[in-house]
Length: 93
Image (cartoon, rainbow, N blue to C red; front, side, top):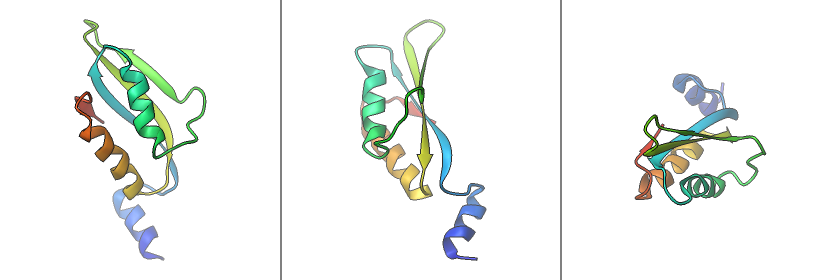
């Protein structure tokens, strides 16, 4: 078993795999487009239907989910780092 396979098993995931990245922010301007643009830097082949948007109960916030093909834990970490670095992203899951 390779070191990469051991790492994948230890994390509970086997790469590559389908993964849903979610970011939340204020429901204003083009937050959904911003999230997709950040994720697309790492996953240029986001397919149609991969993005879903859900407003909060009171409409102040929005959750944007994007289904991607995660290549590795490092790949996911890079996506989450970029999302976290943006001041309009309040939370990422």
